[in-house]
Length: 186
Image 1 (cartoon, helix red, strand yellow):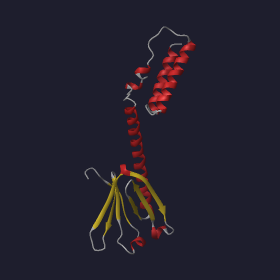
Image 2: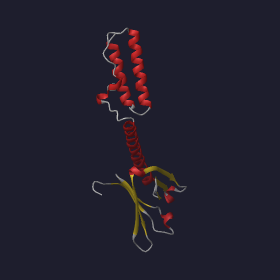
Image 3: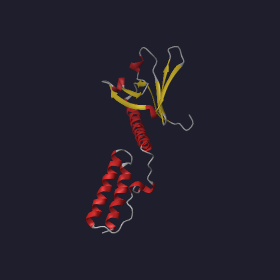
Image 4: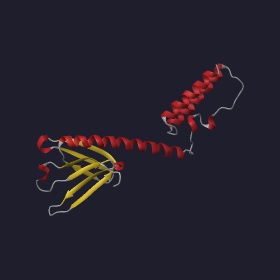
């Protein structure tokens, strides 16, 4: 594919190729690829995108210099298992974990955006207090009632964060603005 680069490649260790031809496999910046070569020629290619990756596992066999290791990639509908040398398996596993974490974060952000949209599409420009919750300008208040109002606003913001409507970063930004606004009135 355009823009795709090979990050690592490998071949099954010999003991796993006694009764079949060894598999050739590689990982790129966008997918994992396995080529199964037929006994009489030809090949079958199996691949999946990193976004479909759910789990990557590596384990070392008893005689690692001879048998290597087992590297398994699991996705929703497919599984790729290969048997490379230990150093290739650990290199591929590191890349797989990095990609898996990156996609988990992307899924988390997407889920949070979907939750926001389901809650009415509330967007906070500049990270301020939501317009519906901005208190109307009032006459100067006593310090006790001001601290109660700030506490109430903090409770409301905490509820929004717990519901997933705002992120931790947005909560902390709004909290610091709210607290600094409360101290300016003293």
